[in-house]
Image 1: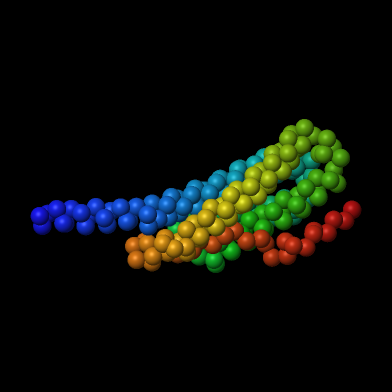
Image 2: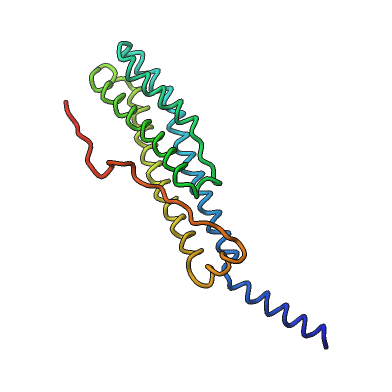
Length: 194
């Protein structure tokens, strides 16, 4: 009889734990980590395309070394700033990663302005293909950021709502994840001058 009571109490606990959100919280955290990996993969794709773009532009605009050097330096800095899944809770680490990516975006913008100055370069098929690849990559980066932010929102909601908040508080003790933020001044439209 004593063992039957232990068995019933154990089964009751197991059934109650299945509704506590433990597994769902774990799945949501894994979704955040996977979404961040997608963000990193799209940034890596951009970094991999840049040497080809720079080489193509160098062939046509050898005297624009300052801009080309800025792109090369920005790419090197981006390669040095790594943000792993373990650092997603650190707003300062995420801000540093975003700053490095913003410098890269600025350098690429200046490079594309240089390309506008050289009609032969704009007509070069290799350059046009690379420019389209970069444009597509920038769109992929934006989509990956949005998916990451959605995954962060789902995760953060799952650890803050009842009864999952109790599971998190007493069993998992996971912290909220930091969503990807817009760069400072991003709300203002960039100035274009010819």
